[in-house]
Picture 1 (cartoon, helix red, strand yellow):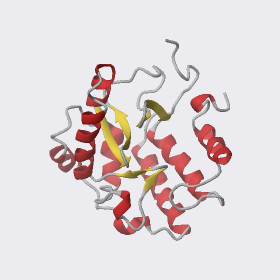
Picture 2 (cartoon, rainbow, N blue to C red):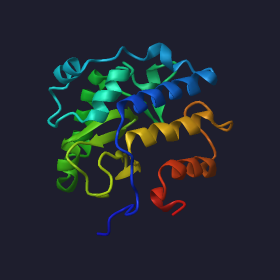
Picture 3 (cartoon, rainbow, N blue to C red):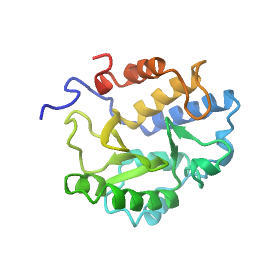
Picture 4 (cartoon, rainbow, N blue to C red):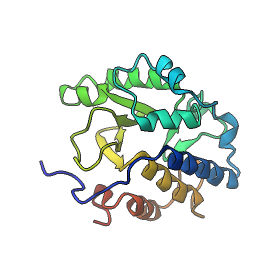
Length: 207
């Protein structure tokens, strides 16, 4: 199997950059009248995060530690939030909800031998309606050039963003666009143009 995205390079992860981008994403939503900040939970210290994540069999990567050091997710599923904090079409999980989503993912997708090890060590930080965004913590088979891509688990398992920072940059441009509507509704051609801008060649688009 040829490696996906053989020419991709991603800058070294920066927690400060991620937090600045997440703040900008909140601002983008709230400028549209979507008060996502009202229901974001308080940040978690590393010690508290590790204590709450004893259910997870892998080592927590710096991206997940940084994400939850920014905010603790949203307590409820998107259906039950007035203003869900979306990463595209998955909402930001609290740690308690992440545990539930992990068990559900393993029950329905982790039963397949070819996917079991990947998913067993992938942290689900966002979810919606039987789909998840996960961060693999023990590598992934899709592209050797990407150390911490964001992988979608929904009727298949595929890279959707080249890194967490690229995911948030992509979301900022989507939400800021004049054609964006609540619930991540926008014309597909615009969505894909922005997606490929931050994740060049994603799904073969713009390659």
